[in-house]
Length: 313
View 1 (spheres, rainbow, N blue to C red):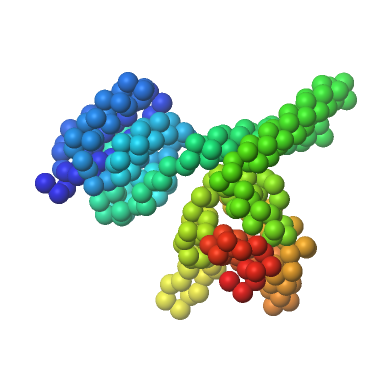
View 2: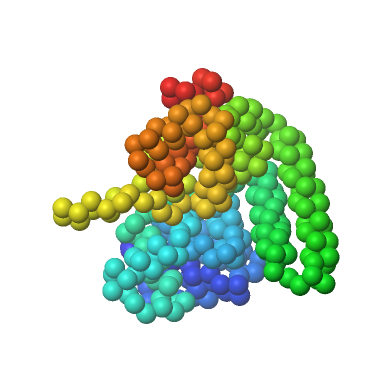
């Protein structure tokens, strides 16, 4: 039965609530290596069209990877997007069991993009970058605390800041060494770094978190990162175009890279200044430049050409 071939999984730390479209029952599976192994065997026998899983802070990674390795089609979706879909369908109640059914229906009607696993090197680099972001957040918190803390405790905070800076510096060196050791990334690394504004952290983030770069067209890559403008029009009203969703980690480093590029990259600087002269707000101009910069980087990897050859892409 066609409707029974879509599966939704509500993931928590302890268990997986599994719903098959067309069946009322919801099965519970332990979110452990043993439980996931048994679940994957069941899914291989069922052979569904698509298995839909919400991104839940990392608890979904083990089961998603296991399903992918088994050759099953699995989509990882944004929970907010699923809740909006549920409300549009009039499904206002929320429980783990209901969520599994909603995910199965979402998979059938929306057909989200299938998950593509990263290489082992990509996974390791992602883990290093996650740790770097964690250190950066802690460092910023301590630096902010230093401004308001009593004089007698400033020495303690300053020692922590010094320790965090040293740890972050060591991690940056580890990231660069790891990237340099991956032969498969050397061409991409050299191409990306040829663009003024793209530094070591931006290059590492694009390699790890945006493997689709160079493989999609400009509209697809902009939507994937979350820098594509969305229309908000109704009748005669023409609302502001806004960007929404996408990969936040990639967007954050692209923002910083674009800030630098508005000063040192001739193409991005020219567009930024042109938009400001037209009366655009700085935030709007910078977002437009982020999109253009991403498009240029995408074309560079697509054509396997450094920055100077990508100007007309």
